[in-house]
Image (tube, rainbow, N blue to C red; front, top):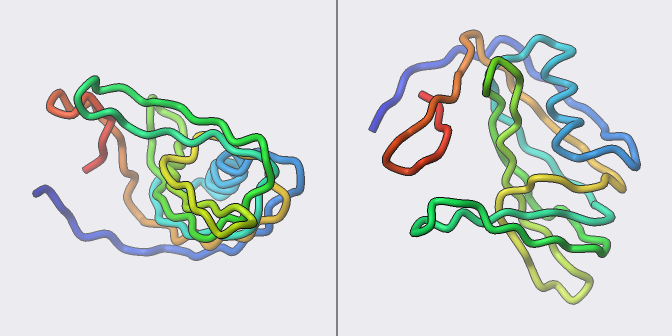
Length: 139
């Protein structure tokens, strides 16, 4: 395990714009407030979504697209730097009207309504390539 202590410097709450991209809204907030590291939670609803699942054997993401309204029952992630730009690593549990849930790495989704809480950290987190998992991970 690798870890370090982080100091929180600020906290933000935001309401996402209807029609915007869910993950891009988080990244825009981080860019506007110069947040290079942080942790967020969010909830709301989306009109569609692209969810990724990481195939550990093939070491690549598998994409599933949902072209339907979904509730964002839970959304959690972190903000860090990837290739010198802000990246919101976003995971979500989305639910259908039946209550059936779909979940995974949320790559893209069109906001219907969304609310977010972002806690910023003092020191930047930068993602670097991890040869074991073939993922860009932070320390």
